[in-house]
Figure (cartoon, rainbow, N blue to C red):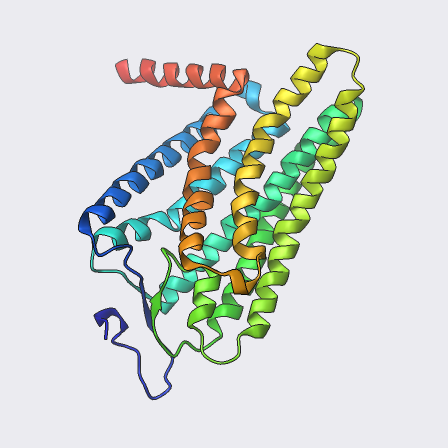
Length: 320
């Protein structure tokens, strides 16, 4: 029996400690993946921190669109920090164990940041809809109070769903084996370790996924449907290009995030594959958060200008 599973009792007492599955028996492969993930993790933290700092320190970016973008950067930082450090440790160390409480904590923060991001992306789509389809009323309809409420709702929904789902999962008994066939404490692999009938819990996970992933996605689709309809009737080609360019970055982020998350949580249980889920988990937890700052900065002149200004200020301060 694995040392990290030593607290598993065969007399029916629930498992108190888990262990993440080893990625590979080949040490070189583990170190290669460790190096790749570490570099992307550092790039994600640096990029999202720079985006948030740039928006907070440049008054010209104190608009609803960039307010939501700053929130998105904070979410991405929390999202990756709740998962990646333990993942890196498990790749190069024999200490792949995690307590039941630690696993529940990791799951809660993963769901909190993930669901909040789903809601925030929908809020960003609504913001673009008002800006393009109702420009004369945009300033009054999307004021600071409305933006703050939308951000609070996004974080609040994430918190409630995180508490609910974590409670549902960890109210189950885990009778062994205690090896999690994943990089972190995700919902499907944890349900796979539970003993007894888990159909009720699986149904709750699916309903939560439909409500919290599909519903915001449908709102995004509806917003962009109205946006495209408004853009196509614009008389000026320059106006059409500007409107589409402000939305393209957001659409790309939505596609990357929702595409991988939907495949993971909305597909039938019969098609569940641990290897596919591991790949998709790396994609929506790390790859998207690494590329989001690049997508938003390289395609946005205002962000690039403000970022240069911020970096120049930091350079000047270091020489004083």
